[in-house]
Image 1 (cartoon, one colour):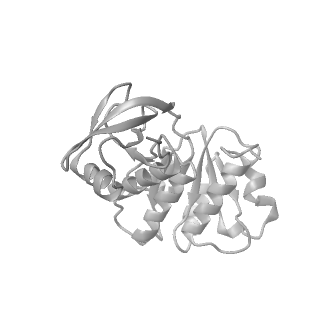
Image 2 (cartoon, one colour; image 1 turned 90 degrees about the vertical axis):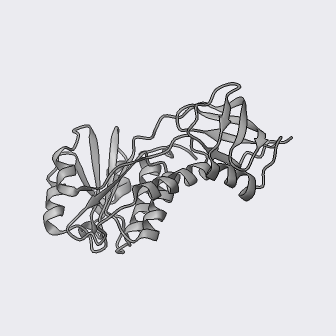
Length: 249
């Protein structure tokens, strides 16, 4: 049977040659009733640790489908070092952020509570589910780490000296000297992109971020962008100027 390369499924079981993978009830339902797969069909499995594997469905029971690993199709990729620090926004848009950040190569998602954050709770399990679904669709073999929310002050208190802070600063929107593509083009090493809440970081927070030795204040253009739009723009600029897309034409 021809392998449908777009059908990928994340699992938690170890993957290796001839491994038997038993899916839980929810995944079995998804595989058999949503994807309409049956015994003898093949798909791709990954678990974030053992690369990607071609597998065949050997049992199609409703409560526990079983798959047999046939061959490795891709080695395990390293987890990307890129970090996204963002203030939580409305639920549907947090789903969007988790999905698109995964597609755009983020390795760590860090929600931060700020002076102007309007949400008091973040469902990190839901974020992880959205990240897994995005990884299945986009071909990643890694799942980004979803960290528990933390205050901006606490985050900066323990900031590592080896990670750049790419601070998307609305106050520099009209400054050509701080265009993000130009600022980050010469950077090497680990980086974190900081995206503020609706209304931006407060003056106190802005001063605190800029005071960090690793901080680079950057502009995303003249227009004031929504938080989720700014995230997309910043990640795309970073990947093109300094990240995974650099040098690819």
